[in-house]
Amino acid sequence: MSPTPPVALTIAGTDTGGSAGLAADLKTFARHGVHGVFALTVATAQNTTGITAVTPMAKEFVGEQIDAVTKDFNVKATKTGLLYSVDAIDVVVDRFDRLGPLVVDPVLVNSSGLPMLSGDVVAAYRESLIPKAAVITPNVAEASLLSGIDITDRPSAMDAAAALAEMGPAVVITGLLEDRWAVDILASDFGVEALEHKLVDTTNVLGTGCSLSASITASLASGLPFEGAVQAAASFVLAGLESATTWRLGEGRGPIDHFADPGLH
Picture 1 (tube, rainbow, N blue to C red):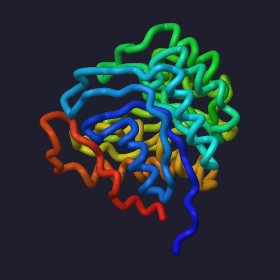
Picture 2 (cartoon, one colour; picture 1 turned 60 degrees about the horizontal axis):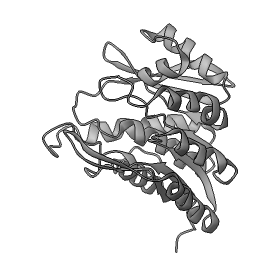
Picture 3 (cartoon, one colour; picture 1 turned 180 degrees about the horizontal axis):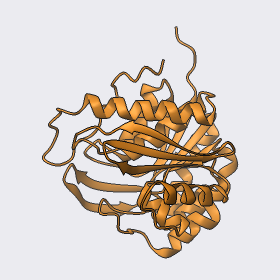
């Protein structure tokens, strides 16, 4: 007999290749001993080489899914992934009081670093969603877009993190590279700091951002404080990258190993 697990909710899109989005989130929750529930925002047809079709869900249906799970489950924390429109953001904001600590992974740019959603959506993130969040986890391109600061190095990343933290949430900026190191920039009530991790030589990197934010969400649902949740998430993603280095799943960029042993428990 095992104790009843905590519940975490992900509000995100699908990846039919099983590498990112809801697939990555639910696998990450499971690896952390957390029961995952979800609300689907966008259905995609995709694999390791790219996305070939996208079908957004109606805002009413997104809301109905959130209502269904929050009325039945005691949701301890929630993360958002791809929110494709201002309406989708509004649906989440309108239900904010049911979600527990909110981790926002702002999926705003494509793999080339170019904006893929309208300026109205970016503005809604800034004005409506980010101020409600406990944590946001933008990559360098997204943090640049949201903060208005062009991130080119560690000092500018730290400035952007501090600017975003002034909107209310703790901030984790990912994707800053320095030689053979990957650097995450954290901003919280404790100040701004950098966490360095060795850079893993692999093309199997799909789902890293989703998995990091999902790991933080799972840890918050389990009662871990922010700093501990971020450290655990970094270890989780690093273990997944290292374990999947030699995998050959698909013809493009493959996924990380969500069931590698990060020494979390």
